[in-house]
Length: 118
Length: 112
Image (cartoon, rainbow over all chains, first blue to last red; front, side):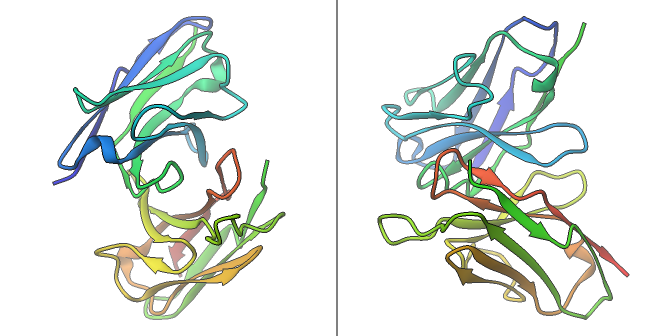
């Protein structure tokens, strides 16, 4: 059974940092791209970042480029999202999603909540 | 960025009746590889999004055949042939042809 489990969400002050993790199981991890998609409370979906199966190619939304870094450890079947210089507008539930390609997003985890507030 | 515009934003439908959601992009979603990367997602209340349709018209495994996707270029449609109670939720289209990936605003589907 395919599983994606996000963790690392927390309450953090503006300007702070946080690292999210997405632990996968039930499929050949290195064969799949992973994306992070966020949803602010009561709002729609916003794609944040994506990484190829090999980890050699990464993509970012303009709103997070230069502040967020996506990476993966295929030996641990885990993708990370390092978030620096956090802003109030980064407050959201962050989902990771797997796909045959970055835009595939065929299966989603349950999400982890990030709250940026003083 | 590619703008994805869904309509309507709210859709009340009687159980057993059809429902249709439109999604339009401001540029063609035909990729240079010939594919059109247009997906549809369902988000039930309190749940994570679930992909229903990929590349315009391909239904994901386990998705009931009452769901269908169609369209081309800049104009796409998600149809539900007969609404069931479990279909209540918010539906999003998403384009993956152009970077960055973008979503429509979402259409809230409810029982009339």
